[in-house]
Picture 1 (cartoon, helix red, strand yellow):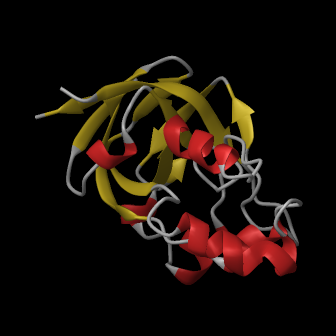
Picture 2 (cartoon, helix red, strand yellow):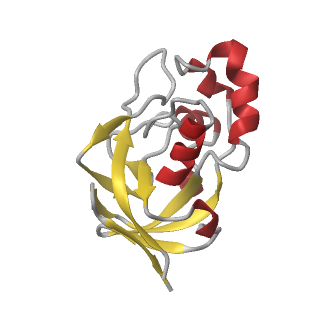
Length: 162
């Protein structure tokens, strides 16, 4: 069965004049039906009216490593993800899969598409933005809905359930 571990939990509170990037690491967090406690996702809240299928965003460490190998100095939390997962193949993640993480249960909704908010990253900017958007196509991460609220901590298992 596919599994990995939580390498980093990332959040960013609502900050006037700023988008939800870059998120900062925390040791643990409560996951609610509306998202990760302490995290504010401008796009989900303002454009999608709190869409529950976009409650949590996750990415694998392998994707971040690939981007770094390609010359993009991406770190956990930079792309807006809440959960960075180690030891799990990005390609193994599919819509509708359910994962137990800490005491929460998540269900994969759909892939997150790159957006121009990423231009705000200091190493991207407007000049490199279009190239970065192409690079991220189908690799920005996954959104998940919350089926059971719970607490997640760094190091917790991210386990596919049947």
